[in-house]
Amino acid sequence: MSGLEMNRIRHAFGNDMVLDDVSLVAGPGKLTCLLGPSGCGKTTLLRLAAGLESLQQGQVAIQGVTVADGASGFSVAPEKRDVGLMFQDYALFPHLNVFENIAFGIENLSPERRQWIKDSLEHMGLSHHTYNYPHTLSGGQQQRVALLRALAPEPGVLLLDEPFSGLDVTRRAQVREEALTFLKQSGVAVMMVTHDPEEAMFMADHIVIMNEGRVVQAGTPVQTYFHPVSAFVTELFGPVNRCRGTVTDGQAKTQLGTFDAPGFENGTEIVVMLRPEAILISPSGEDVPAKKGTHFISGRVDSTHPLGSSSHLHIIIDDGNGGEQVLHVRTPGISLPAVGSSVNVSADMTNAFIFPAD
Ligand code: ATP
Image (cartoon, rainbow, N blue to C red):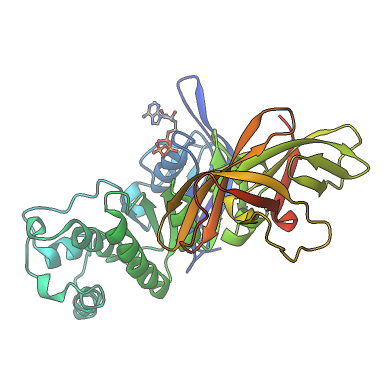
């Protein structure tokens, strides 16, 4: 198997177990994202793959060859591992120009590799900076040079740690789009660390979700977003509305209607999780064509926040226990109901995730 394989990795710093039986594969021509909250062990895993941290348990293989084995203590030096690295604080060499920075790691600068550097700079819109020094480049331009520097020695595996986090929102979107096209064309196996779910959704072929040193779900962006296996994974992608209920004959009644809850025993306390786009609103009193089984309740608009392509609303509903609950709602467009007005609220039952209440 080419690309990167990590098998049954365990790692502790002192008595703190920070990676607990982690296995993953990052295949060639694919971008694999490690996604998870701060401190869950993403960077440590990347450092173990690179050989920057010594492996305690498990195996690492690159391009089908074992490069580290915890049991025997075997370890290939980082520079011999066929990996390219780019960290968040990538530092370009200030005394080398753009071309020299990219060429730095290439052992034999053949005419073909020279041409590759020139073509790549052209592709990244940087050819007019070929002989400029890093301090004359913008942050986004430096980031692109750092990426080319990591790719220049033609590694089989590229390891990226939060490579775009230093950039502002607009520039980040542009640089990561360009980088993605470029990486796809190169055919390298990429493992990228991020804690930004949108970035993972945008870039990844495969997302490995981690929590407290363990892999809790792995799959395509669509699988992880639309079929989360736990409340933790559901909430990792953004704010979620929660409604509690108790299961009776495969159904759970909540303040937002009755949801199918197959597979749960009678009497099980469950939580229904609904993303903001799964809460539907319509003006109060309007005759809305409803799907069979749709349950409308009354809500009051607490605040509206137009975001451009969509809007975020806070809607207050009765929580079913004499109190109030604030729902996060995302609607397309900017034509919004007035703050304080009444609305009909319903849930998209097909887009609800049900888990046992914790
Ligand atoms: P972030 O998203 O904040 O970068 P992360 O998921 O990459 O976090 P790691 O940097 O891998 O997490 O850290 C995992 C855990 O290991 C954390 O609790 C961290 O404090 C601890 N840790 C990391 N490096 C060391 C070290 N050299 N010595 C001791 N503890 C460490």
